[in-house]
Amino acid sequence: MIRKIAIDIGHANNTGARGNGLEEHAVAATIAERLAPMLERLGSRVDVIDFPKITNAQDLNATIKAANEGGYDFGISLHCDSADNPQAHGAHVCFYPGSVKGSRLAICIAEPLARLLPGRANTVQSRPGLAVLKKTRCPWVLCECGFITNPENASILKDHPGRIAEAIAEGVKDYINQ
Ligand SMILES: [Zn+2]
Image (cartoon, rainbow, N blue to C red):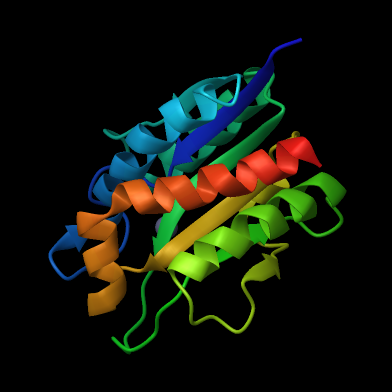
């Protein structure tokens, strides 16, 4: 059976974080655009889940519905962090507590992603409160691909979204091959 992977572009248009002239949904979309063909080259079927033109809350509900109806082996939500302190930087990956596969996928992705975007003390985080992790039935991870509010992270988000996609794809490859 062919493996099916969901890539979720976090938030709807202009409803996520902003910083350094960037907007979270648009940034996640550019990463997803590059990540999808990379995962297809690993022999997977890939759907990009995106509802750009609705509210943030509607986007979350629609994403969870699509995730649970799509028959996915696992899913990856793409986000970026923000903070009042522009010095906060670095990527991390979240999974739902108790999800063995989710935890494994998060560990696999966090390693190359945090190599590209270092700085967080905990690059893998168990998060009970995130609906997209809690309400999706297949293993699901949420990638915070650095801080949109940090100038150095923002320049990677802006100029090198393909490198972020490569790091996530490398982690997915490790997960699949384990
Ligand atoms: Zn977000």
